[in-house]
Image 1 (cartoon, rainbow, N blue to C red):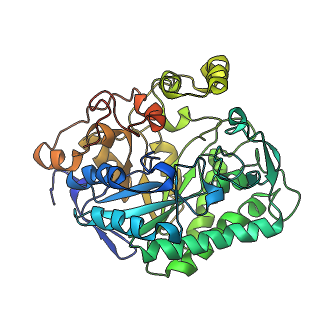
Image 2: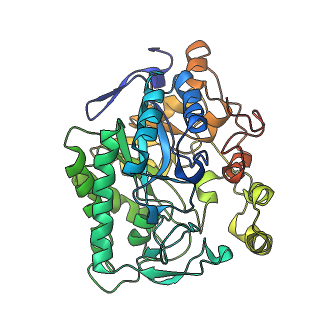
Amino acid sequence: MQSISNPALTTGNLNGLTLKNRLIKAGTFENLSPNGIPGTELLNFHKKFARGGIAMTTIGYCAVENAGRLNANMLTMHEDYREDLRLLVQGIQDQGCKVSGQMGHCGAFSKNHTLKGRPKGPRGGLNILGFAEGMWFCDAMTLSDIDHLVNAYSEAATFMKSVGFDALEIHFGHGYGLCQFLSPLTNKRKDNYGGSLANRLRLPLRVLAAVREAVGSDFPILGKISMSEGPRGGIRYEDSIKICKALDEAGIDAIIPSNGTSTMSPMLMFRGESILPALLRYEKNRLMRIILKLMGRAMFPTLPFYELYLLEQAKRIREVVKCKMVYIGGAASAENFTQILDAGFDFIQLGRTLLADPDLPQILAEKPDYKSRCTHCNQCVGTIESPQGIHCPVFFGGAQS
């Protein structure tokens, strides 16, 4: 699919992997794998984007071990699910679409009741996500726990390559496990894994090295980071430049500079209308509903949306790294895509835009000036907890097709 008027529809290359255009479906937890088992609903979800012409779709939140799942409906990269995952990946690829798996670990916050013991992160304390579920506390990882985690990433990477994934995306951002080690706000360790940025980078860099060794030099590895966590004392934009330079020097193939965290500042990720109404619509836990009603307005403020709201900060990273760069954040039109590629970015990840327009690449081929109908109302965010899984309720009303 080539078009002079739509540079986003030209082919791209990611460490030897040819992508038919520059558009990638961003990883979003789909909530379509009951009890962690991928099936027809999850396959159909991703086939929509594959049929619509996207170059590569990302399976959201592939936990590297059971202890890395936020809840029991998340995927685990484990032999027990080999055939299910193989069929999922192959089914998407049969539609002419590449498949990336987003490698994640929840670290210190979880509401996964299949977890044996408490969740573990850089330090002990309250388990923010699980508090309303009766999982009140988290523990600090020992050095042995850290070694175990690195090995879990290695084994998961080997497994994911063996079932057919075309690329892997390591999640270093959004407040999840590896981000908890990167952040001076959540990492108060006194050993070699805490303190200076070099120490806080130690675990993420060990994970990247382990994944690279597992998959080989010619297999694409992407990494998603948070450029800023928002709250005072967290990761800052200046920190993210140093983090990305370290990942680049360590041999990552592409960096995806996102923003915010799921627990402290999610609106920095999304911007636009507050996600609070959508969260309340689907939240069943009575205690969590009370917490959301009391604290939600402060936690999830409406932030003015504007197109390409992360571009200027992401360009600062583009200037200092040699690896490929994948832009994400407020891209919704052919004009936006041209701006991004002209700024030196190699690919574009799309989330809400594709939920509203799953066949966006095909539309662009026919309508070069098309702008997505996504209104950035953020109602889709709450549907992650809905029985239908994540979807655009404005245009699809919950039907997965």
